[in-house]
Length: 145
Image 1 (tube, one colour):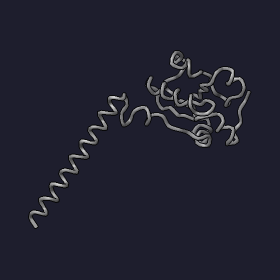
Image 2 (cartoon, one colour):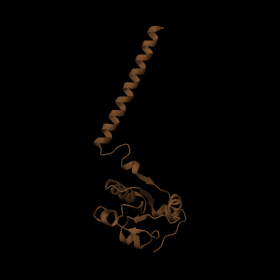
Image 3 (cartoon, helix red, strand yellow):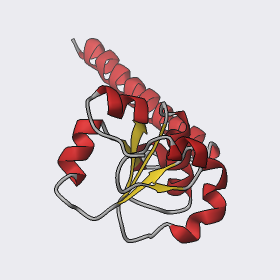
Image 4 (cartoon, one colour):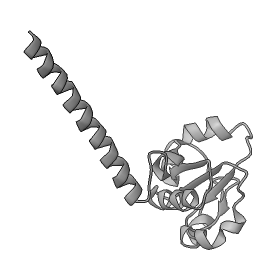
């Protein structure tokens, strides 16, 4: 019986050490990649059109940024949005307030993800990714031209 307890105890220690090493390795990998457990991925929050309406539809102050081209913006956009194309966002951060929640969107969701990362990397928070205007329209929400 005593031998079995020592084996069980040794197995517990080995499992503990393995988990510790795995967590340490994961932390080192994240640090090397420029992220952290609470880094960019955690700072950008995805929003559905309904979630946006629930969170910001009641008049909560925020900045809604359409990161498409000016031509795409002119063809139709969400009311109240400001057009700052993703290609020029990093150069136009002086136009983005630091004291408001930020919501970004594009046509399909690709450029908005890039824009959200740019904003988070520049120290903005909270940042919400609304995704694409296509989802907004498909959910029955209006756009203006």
